[in-house]
Length: 320
Image (cartoon, rainbow, N blue to C red):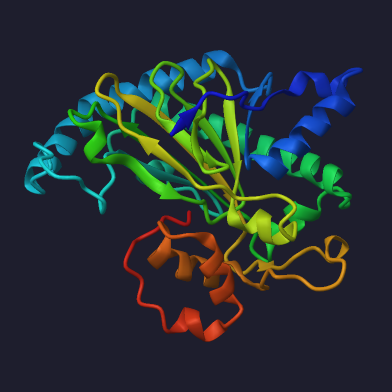
């Protein structure tokens, strides 16, 4: 069942005025009860966003569309006669920004596109760190706490998944992206403002994340749930396919560094905690095999380090 209820939209410009307290409260409520919120007036230039959307869609049309259609045929998915539960109806490529960029290793990108994505990535990195500090303020943690935890000894990892979700003749037969929580830290999504598809699970119902022009959708990953001792939640979400329109999705993941030590912040633990402590890279090794399964068994498994070494991953996950 799907419901249309008021999705939290945060106007960051209000942080600089008389409505700061109400805006911070809205962010806190969204992190506690939604795991998602949408931001406007975030400081990203609209012309940059428009240009990136245009070039992303052009690249798909020119270089990816035929490959995607050929891949569907090779897997026998072009007709979709039965429900498919082990495949996602998406065409993607990945950009790494930190610790080392691969931007100039990606084929079929114009110089203009590379320059725009480099600029966009740097601005998103700054925005992610600013948002983490807002979370620190709401949680009563010192400014910079979350960034420091994410840094480990090598600095954070940061990368972008560029996706297109092409029209699907039988949306009821396959998902654009199967339901999952994100493994990492904080995710910043620039999504298509005309073609919908992103949904989150709230109180047992799938809720549409509304496409808003020039907005950025924020969601929290598993690491923030652990660090906040469950005060903030990572939430299951998915992408449903559509019969009409090609949906663009540019999701940037600001994650801990591979050797970052993750554990609940001591000031947020009153007595004991149900959450584990671990090294981020170990968590990602576990996540690779069970991405599309509930997060709770992952947390439980991380309490036993041997569970990770015994795992035989069945899915590849881009960790940036």
